[in-house]
Image (tube, rainbow, N blue to C red; front, top):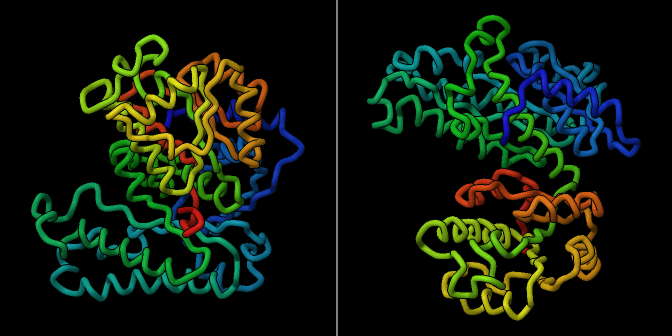
Length: 394
C-alpha cells in the first residue's frame, strides 16, 4: 500500500467532499476503545467516501467501554452503529502482562490471562445480546521487545508466545458469537514493522500508540471489512495475457520463447499464477481478455509445461482484436454478473485508462512494473476479501 501523508489525505478528502456523489450509502461506525484512535478519521473517511460510503463516526469516552454498553440509553446505542470496533490495549487492561511479565510469570500468569479473556468475552457477549450488528475486535500485538529478551522465544509460556496464545483464545471467543470478527492488528504490525507502527511520542502525549502511517493501513483494513459486510465485494477477475501471466508476447515470442517457470523472471510470473489460483480456489471467477489469436492462447494454457493456470480455470476467454472495454462488457453479459463485480488487471496503462473511461463501474488496476511484486500486489489489494467461505464458493 502506498503511503500518503496526512496533509495530502486531507487535501484529497476536501476535494472528494466538494465533488461528493449523490448515491452514497451511509455507514455508521462506532469505536469502543481504551486508547486514542481519533486520528484515523481522515484516512478512513477518505477511503470510505472513495468507495461510495458516507461515513458517520462515534467514539466512546476514553476507557469508558462498559459504561457505554451496559447503559441502554447511552449515546452509543442512540448512535445505532452499522459496525462497532473494539480497540483494547493490554497496556491498560493488564499492566501485569505488559510491564511486569517476569513477576507475573512466577506468581499468577494463568489468572491474569483468564482475566483478560473474561473481560473481552464480557464485552462481546453484551454486544451480542444487544444485537448491535457486526463487531470488529482488535487482537493483541506481540511486544516489540519481549520481557526475557532472546530467551523469550524459547518457551511457549514466555511473553511473546503468551500473546500469541492469547490471540488464539480470542479467535475462539469470536467464533462463539454471530457477526464478530477479528482485526489482526498483530499481523498488520508485522507487515509494516514495529519501527513504523509505534510512535512513543503520541503514546505519552495523547495515549495514541500508532503512527500516521500505521493508521492509514488500519483504515484500509476497516474498509475491507466494511465492503465485505455491505456486500460490496468483487466476484470476477479478468486478466490480460501477454506480460501479465507470463513474460513476453505470445504472438512474437512463440510458446517456447515466453518467460514462465522456475528461474527468474519466469518464476515471478509462476508465483503470480499461484496467487491467482488461490483466488480461484476461494470461489473467484477467472477470465482472460487479450488481443491475441485464441488458438495461441489455448496452446499456452493447455500445452506449456510450466503454466500453473490452465484453460479449465477460466470461465471465459476473450481472445480477439476488439477493444478491451467492449470485450469486458460482453464478459459481464455472458457471465450474467454486474460490471461492478469485475476487476480487470493489465500491465498496459493505455488499456487500463480505456476501461476506466468507458466502464467506470469496473475496477481496472494496472500491474506494477516489477513482475516479482505481482504476487504481493494481488494479495494486498483485498478487493476479493469475504467473511465467509462456503461449499457454494468452492
